[in-house]
Length: 157
Length: 157
Image 1 (cartoon, rainbow over the protein chains, first blue to last red):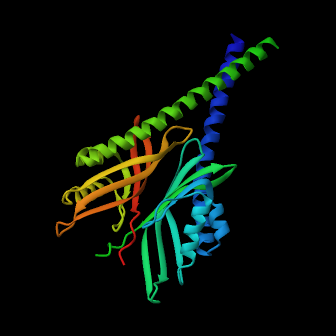
Image 2: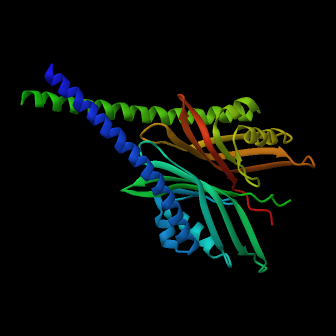
Image 3: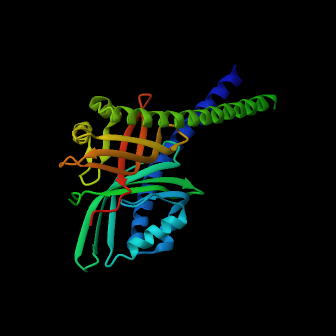
């Protein structure tokens, strides 16, 4: 009987430790995904191609408007390089919502972006819209597995 | 000593049961999210407004190109109704990838869509592109918390 009680007490303790460490992980991971989102925005705005691609998992897909899906680091590198080659390209984005699964390895960030650039004729252009980025923890680091965005601006006639 | 061994054996058994039931849940949830994605596509293609909106969580956001973010069932209902009002609107989509977190309550589906419709002048138009839908299990049912898509077609000049 006494051993049964000790066993039950140990089980209860293990459950408690499990639950509280899981809750702590979740909250930390939400902050981690938000930080990863904003660090990715920083290196992308700085047109650092290597650092921008390094944020992506090997199997990642980037879903750019008016282009086919870019899957894998080589295709993603080409898609990012095309952005960085746009004259006077400037971009920023900010997450309005971040969620992480209870298990702490899958999450997403979503929010709004703003960009400015010059068109082929040198005319100043601007765009703003929204995005969703899916993040997966791989080897202790949050990596992008999917990124997609679209514009708020009315479609051209 | 003997009790310690029994305790360790019980712990090992509990871990094993925990791991295998979690793996089983993940695989089932992947199939569940895929089925939810395709059932949502079915009611949306049928222009069933109530059923299409019912797939969305109360706090869901739908991120339609060339429009601001629609958050909440009322805004989402208006966004869907605008699609269903397009003359001869037909749509289908199919997930190419589905992932669910180990904890089994958060996942996403991503794939490609096709749509056809008539423009204001009655001219037949078509579009195809890609999408990402984020799903969350609420009250035992998979609900959309975020949905976003964009076109593969070149931007209008």
